[in-house]
Image 1 (cartoon, one colour):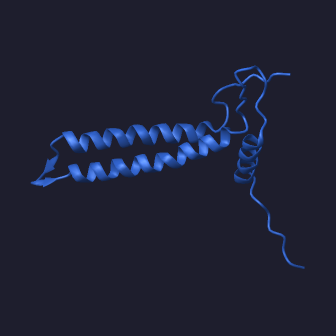
Image 2 (tube, rainbow, N blue to C red):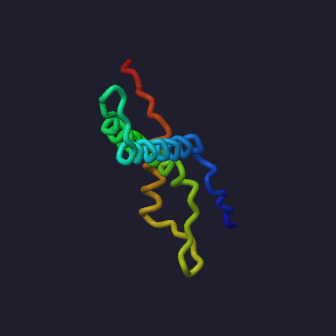
Image 3 (cartoon, rainbow, N blue to C red):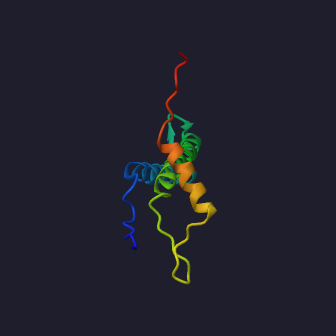
Amino acid sequence: MVQKYDGLSHCKLALAFAVTMDLLGAISLLLGVFAKLEIQGRDFGDLLVYSGALLVLFSLAGWVLWYSGNIEGLHLQKEFGGSVDDAVNRLARSVSRRIRIPRTRSSPT
C-alpha cells in the first residue's frame, strides 16, 4: 500500500517560524547595508546588519526542527519503483523519534 505524502503536514509552526525569521533577517540585513539610517548623527546600519544576521541564525533552528519533524513523514521511492527502507532511513527515523519523544528518568528506589 502506498501512502500519499501530504507535504507540509508536520511541524507547521516550526516552518512558519523559520520562514518569518528568514524574511525579517533578510529585510533587516538589506536595510542595514543599503539604507542610510542616521538619528541625531548616529548610524544604525550596523545594528540592523548584526540583528539581521542573528535572525537568520535563529531561523536555522526552525529549519532543523521542521526537517527533523518531517523525516518520518517522508515517503521516498527509488527510480525503479521500490520503496527505500535502508539503514539510513531507519537511522533517521530513530533519531527523529528520540528528538520528539522526551525520555523519562527512572527515579532510584
